[in-house]
Amino acid sequence: MRVIAGEHKGRRLAAPTWPGLRPTSDRLKETVFAILAPRMAGARVLDGFAGTGALGIEALSRGAASVVFIELDSRAAGLVERNLAHCRIADGYVMIRAEFTRALRQLPADRRFDLALLDPPYDLGDLASMVEAAADRMAPGGVLALEHASRREAPARAGGFAAVRQVKAGGSTVTFYREAPEEAPAVEEVS
Image 1: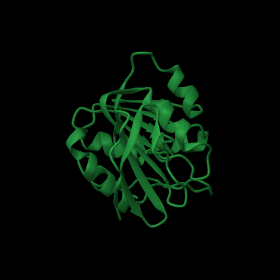
Image 2: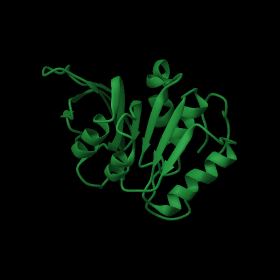
Image 3: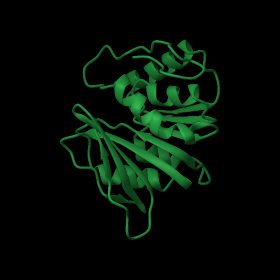
Image 4: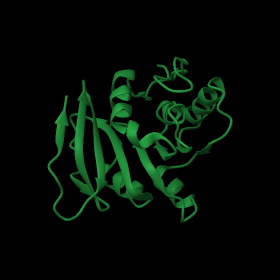
C-alpha cells in the first residue's frame, strides 16, 4: 500500500497486522482519485471509516486543504496517526475516534465537506444511513464516494444525494453520489 500521487508520492503506508481491516486496493484508490482529481485542490475532505488513513492521506498528498479522519477502532486510529507521521504530515487534519454518525454530530454545525470518502466494513449496517449522515455535512456541489462489497447494492438515493456513477474492481465497488433533484440520472457503471 502506497501513496500514488502528489507531494507524498511513493511513500509506503503501514498495513494492519490484525484481521478485520480491509484497506482499499491501490488499483481502486487510483481509479477513485482519477475521477475526483478535478475537485481535489483545496478540498475539505471527510475520510469516514479511515482504517489506515490511505484515502485521506492520498487526498492531502494531492492538494486537499484539510481532512477529517473518523475511525472508531483505536488500533486503526493509531495506524492512521503512524501513517500521517511517516508521510511527515503534521497539520491540515483532524482525527476523531468515535462511531461515524456520533463523530459527525461532534463537529461544529457549520463544518462542511467538498468530498466524502466512506469505506465502512463491508458487512457493517445500513449503507443508506451512512450516506445520509455524510450527505447532511456536504457543501453545495460536494461529491460523496462510498466503497462497498460488490455483492451489496448501494442505495440509489439517500439524504438528497443520488448515485451517479459506479466503479467496480474485483469484489469492491465505489458508488459516487451528488446532490440531485427528484429525477436522478441513471448510474453509469465502469468496470
